[in-house]
Image 1 (cartoon, rainbow, N blue to C red):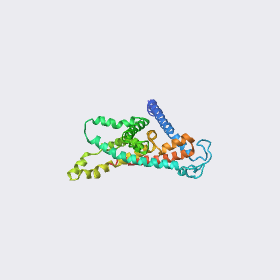
Image 2 (cartoon, helix red, strand yellow; image 1 turned 90 degrees about the vertical axis):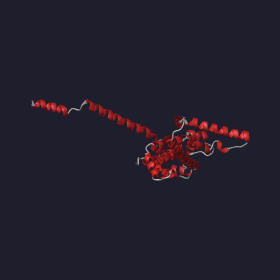
Image 3 (tube, rainbow, N blue to C red; image 1 turned 90 degrees about the horizontal axis):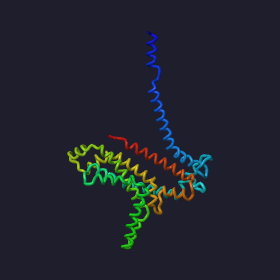
Length: 300
């Protein structure tokens, strides 16, 4: 009797059920998949960043030694990115374009968020769909459409009235308008998502206490939206800075960094200085993305 009891109790405790082994196998498969996925994402970035420090004229193996020349050297043939006037000019243009586009997108995106979340008007659903459409249109098509539209207006003005509007020709104004046309949609969605969480009773209480609409907006609503505004600004800045397809169709003589790098790659081929620029952008983008995540934490 005692032996049977031990056998039964032992069978209940010691052997591992098949279901447990299956769960462990699935967990291991999931872990392996996640690891491989992130390796797949990170491997090209790590390789590009590593070759920025390779003491070689070509971004390829074998490794020739560690160097910072591709960042700081002021002499040819290893002219560093911080002494390459064309790359610095492209970096400066991209920076200011991204600033202008992100500020414009935040302002208009905030207005759009209030419009679609607080107001009821005819054809609201249709207008919302029209606002979202630029996100699903390929950037090349969007850029070509804006270029053709602006060129038709400029050509019509010149043919009919002899007025040449240079700003409607390929250049920075069209680049800004082209990026603004779809980045505004992104900022609108980010800000609207935050606005949905806002308790409208806070504004009603402030009205009952005698506050004006403008003061309520400044002291109650906008402070609540601040994380979304900053986050949308960071996202808009990053998307504008790295945009290529739409910008390529609209750019003039003043080329942003992505176009400058593409032109350098097409004429000279891949060089370690482009890897240095890529490494610099990866670090900067990572820090801004981290800032966006920190700022957008729920502060309710």
